[in-house]
Length: 131
Image (cartoon, rainbow, N blue to C red; front, side, top):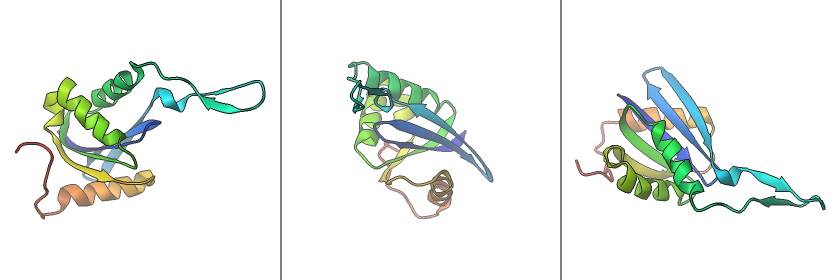
């Protein structure tokens, strides 16, 4: 089992598996990520189907298969929507969430450094899961 972090906003999720000196990152695109061009050159987002968010969250949760502890991060409320979705649809993963933090748009290396510090710090953490 690995410590994992999810940085998520309404357009994408980046799932980080951090283990010692190594890490890997997988990106999941949401339906919001797709943009259409209209004939007049205007950019608009597609209208989302109600199931788009559920598909997005299901794909993100599927990437957390062997999670030990999970840290959710992101600039918007999408991280909280993911947590609520997990509590209903993947409760075994939801109880592994030990923190939810606001983070703008850090680089992959900044996220990995933060995750390593977060999970290797001896200070007690207040998690969102029942311990």
